[in-house]
Image 1 (cartoon, helix red, strand yellow):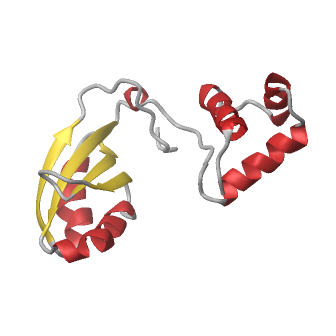
Image 2 (tube, helix red, strand yellow):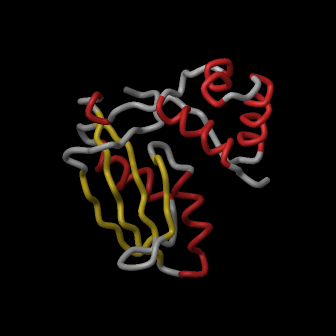
Length: 150
């Protein structure tokens, strides 16, 4: 599926206000409501767009955002390990990267003891991790998390 200018404009409006309705989008872009509905259905169906509610991490004082640098013991397992990590409870995203770490993960944990629990129990279930380095996020700017657990 090719994404065109109209699709990009629809997504831009949703970025500003995820609750905007089909009718309002259509009026702003000068297209029909049916066109908006069909394009959004195609974008979501093709896996190019997902509309979600997101929270500001600073609004959840009992939670902590953590970045985790991970080195994998065997590079041929990189994609498999990234998928395994991405599926763990608390993981927002996992990225295969070039540089110091093989995988960078964003993790949403309880502020009290969550990091230790995640590293010692949750992540420890995955074999083949050579080392990790944790970075607790002290303050976020322009960061929203697609989680329900405020």
